[in-house]
Structure formats: structure tokens, C-alpha cells
Length: 184
Image (cartoon, rainbow, N blue to C red; front, side, top):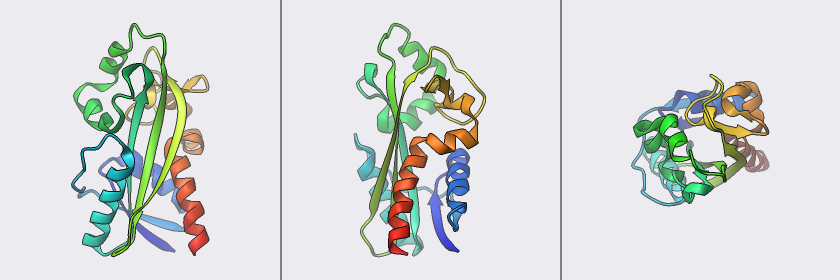
């Protein structure tokens, strides 16, 4: 069984990635130590830098995940600042920002950064299109899941098993797995 260190303090992200990769014979070990995070407008350089930094420090294969929700009416905000906005404002205030907006289109994006010690990092993006609901719905998932609507249901309503089949994180992991299986 292959082992990869997944650097995240987010237990929801860890459980999602662990459950998906387990089916492919990859054991995921959580590391909550974090890494210096670049301040960038795009997720790719943040994930690449984080993966390389930790891989070279731990001397192990490392995976990081940088994710964000990008809302069209807010010019892509909060994007790479999603975690900060979630912590400081939460879903109710994001919904308040969206109160008078007719265009509720949004997308979730995850970029998986993967790096082996001494190597260049690789990035695997995944996107899922949807819209911002008018209210929080569902008790599943985490973060923005209760306000992100995908095909009529929020990620909070889908349940973990269904969400893990269609999520932005799943799409990024599928790209990673396609690469990983081609090299093993």
C-alpha cells in the first residue's frame, strides 16, 4: 500500500480524501502542522508551494489541498480567501452579501498539490459548477457545502457518499489518480 501525507487541519477534507484514496490502495496520513501559505489570487501556486515545502521537510510524498468557492456576482470572491471568509463571516454573511444578486452562479475549485522530496510539485485542479442557494440547507459536509447548490441540492443535502462522487475535490483527486496510476 502506498502512503501519502495529507497536510490539512480540516477534518472534513481529510475524511473525504482518505475515503476516496483508500479504495485505490493509498493510505493517507494526516499532518496538521500546516505550511507557509502564499498570498495569491490563484490556487495553483499556493498548492504547489505548500506541497513542495512540506515534502522537502518531511522527506515523504505529500499532498495538500487548496480550495475555494468563486462567486460570479462577487467577482470571484472569496476564491483563495475562502477559509478566511468562512472563519470571519460564515455562510449567513455570505448569503447577506448575495441578498440582492440575481446571478447566483458560482463554482467550487480544489487544487491538489502533490510532491515527492527533492522533486518539482505537480498540481491537479478540479472544478464543479453550481450556484449559491438562498439559504443554508442540509446538515452534511462542511464549510460552504450548505449554501452551494449543485443540480438542485446543496452539498450539505447530498450526503458524503454522493458528494464524494461529484465534488471539486473528487475531480481533482481523479486527475491525481490518473497520473499516479500511470506512473506506478
